[in-house]
Image (cartoon, rainbow, N blue to C red):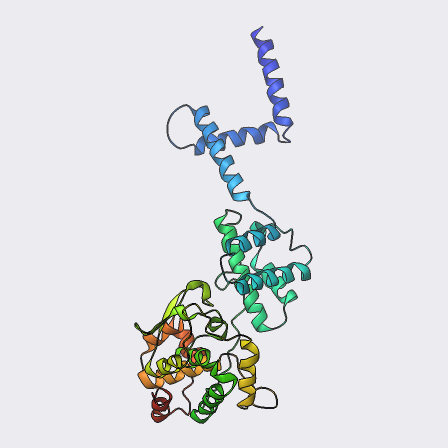
Length: 345
C-alpha cells in the first residue's frame, strides 16, 4: 500500500514538473543549486520559499517599466512648475522624437540602449544644437523614469551618447560709441519708456526673456539689488544682481508703481524699433539676442576682475561657462571699462 502511494506521488510530481517544460534532471539540479545557495539557518523549505518570494518581488521591481510616451507624460507633470517656455520645449522635443521615430512612443524605457537613443536623436534632428538639446531633454525624461523605478540607468548620461555641445561662436561686445548710440536712442524714443528694461539688460546682465517678467517690486533701491525669483530665471534658480551707481541712475529716471512691470506695453515692438533706429536689425548690423548680457559680463570682468561675484550675478553654476561663452574682452581697454561703468550717464 505504501509503495502504491509512493508511485502515485511520484507520478503527480512528474506531471507537475513536466507542465513547466523542464525535465526531472533539470528540476533536481535547480533544487540542488537553490539549497546550496540558501543563506542562514533554519528549515530549508521555509527559507527556500522566503528566498523565492523575495526574488519574485525583486524581479517585479526590476522589470517594472512604462512606454516612452508615459515617461514623457510623467516628466511634463513633474516639470509643470517650471516656466511655460521650458515645458513647451520639453513637449516639442519629445513630440518630434516620437513623430519622426516609428516605434519610439511605445518602446519600454527600461530596455532603451544608448545606441538607440543616439539613432533616434540623429533621425529627428539635423543640427548640432538641436541634437544636444534633445540629448539634455531625453536625459531629463530618463531621470524621472529612474526615480519612478521604470528603468535602472540613464542611457543618455555622461559619455554614453557621443553628442557633444555645439561649438559656441565668440560674440563681439558693443564698443563704447555703439553703446552710447543705443543709450541715446533709448532715451529719446517712445518717451524713454524702455530705459529701465534696457538698463537692467546692459548694467545687470539680465536676459531679455527674464526682464519681461520683472516688476518694480523686485527692484530694491535701498539694498541696491534686483531680485530674480526662481520662477522668472532661465535656469530655474533665483539670484540677486547688484545695482551699481550707473544702473541706479537709469532706474531712478523711470520708476512707476511697485507692482508695475519693468517693460512697457508693446515692449517687443518698441525694443525692436529702438535697435533699428540705432542701426541694428533691418538693413543694419545684425542684432545678437544676448549681446547686452555679454557686454555686461565683459566690461564687468575688465573693470572689477571679480569672477566669483560675476558668476553669481550671471546665475551660472560654474566659472567655465562664464569664461568660455561670455567673456570677450578683445579690444576693451581699462579706459573703456571705466567709461562703461561711469555714473555720467
